[in-house]
Figure (cartoon, helix red, strand yellow):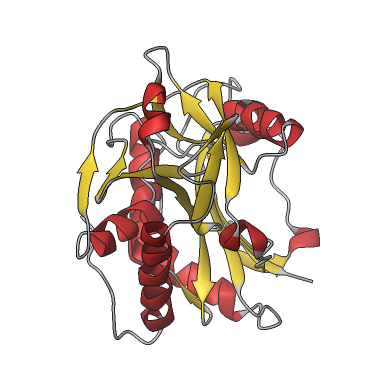
Length: 287
């Protein structure tokens, strides 16, 4: 049984309740962030909470907790689940109860849920994954809101096509981001990723960019779907997926269809960093 935090109390997830009148239930109005632990240490926790704060600001949701308070609650929730080898953490701030069922009134509540981290099949990292593209873009992409309808539809389509992720492509045929990931590709020694502004800037994405700068030229620019043929290697990033190689987009093979040396190098850089993160020996300051 897992222990969660909700509205000032630690209790079992089976006993956790929120009002059916909360705007997160009625309208999908709320924000969240997700991260994992390494050696039971939440990875870049302050940065994830900072993104939660920015998400709330974007959608006009008032938070009643400081960054440091939320971080402490998260750490305590992890501590209260000692049966987890490693944890997947979800921080949620609800829209709160509204008298008209629509207008936020500053009554949101904080929830922290911690579950056992479930690893993905090793073969997707050794052999690479397939992703698909969908014609879509998220509403207010800079906010990680609980309004996830586009992602649900995209993930459903990816599953139909036996793909691990769906990439959003807009009306200008720009590759934006994955439903739950960020996208990178190599053209020669240049690592390219779509710019912030019309995507959610992932914490893992930011870490990878900082690490990769020591080895490769990193370029943040618009990336067109027509450039798929010029991509020699590609990968996606997310807290739960870390750095995952991509060897096929839709029906097009990337490079020679195998996990390339450049992606392997990025994977190793990230692995080395996460191994040392919990010890405090190596911690990047993210922009």
